[in-house]
Length: 95
Image (cartoon, rainbow, N blue to C red; front, side, top):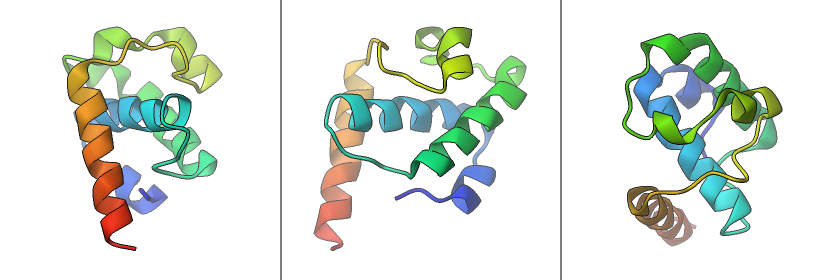
């Protein structure tokens, strides 16, 4: 699971990746890659750094997603799906 400390050290573009992965894991796979508290912190960091971000998946995230603190209705690119599933598998193997 990603921690607040790890999130605080992420460069702005990486925040997009983790927002997408956390949303996909939660809403599609029914599991979490971070606590709700840490996800809220990630959203705050995204808002603070939004103008600096040029990640290719930024286009899938709207201001309303950030204001609501959710990614429930995002279109998830295949890259996000595979990256999330890979991360979840790795986490399960470490247990």
